[in-house]
Length: 285
Picture 1 (cartoon, rainbow, N blue to C red):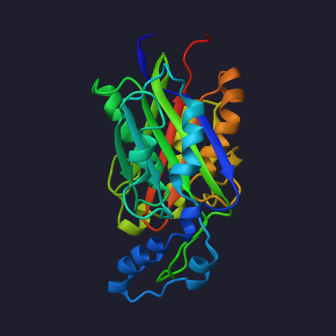
Picture 2 (cartoon, rainbow, N blue to C red; picture 1 turned 45 degrees about the vertical axis):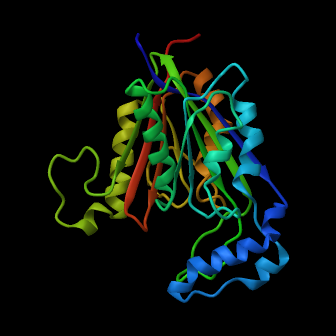
């Protein structure tokens, strides 16, 4: 079978403690400038204590572990939801220097949990157009928010980074789908936007994709996504952005050894976006 973009490596790492950058006085200045137009108060207690982790420090070692010195990356895409503790330029620029090659560095944010899937879609697009032979996606989240949000938000329990390496694999079929306007696979439009984003329609679509993969499919559901009647692994709460992918890093080697197709699913209720990844393994090596 012809080679196609595939997912060759998924690595994850948790971290405790903090970065020294969390005590940098520029952090307070930077955050204050950002929130001032919206009248949001700073978390002076967190700024004084020095809480948070820089994404460059969190992911650089993991990136070096994922890619050897003779494995240059062509594209590096960093995605995050909770903000970095390092003010200024995205960590993707610094992380591009933590791996071989001179990859084009991009950053993606403000897409909730859908951002991880969007980054992976972009990486695969670079590969399919021939621009990149090897694309890398770096996901990161850290526990501190240094201002009071206007409404409650879910922050992670621990700092975490995940690295996904996309390369060509003989026979592997990797598909990422995202839908915010109509349920994927629905031939006719739904009656209203609300029905498109209902719990029932989301669960129905996840069940449809799982059924298409066959009875042996391994299904991994993000925390908070309820799909009654579907045999699936549920990711525990606590890591809203990286938890699904950390679970994939843990379980994918076993599922690949068993030649099982894989489905990942996540739904961001704030954005009404259903994101799924399906992975059909290639022939045994």
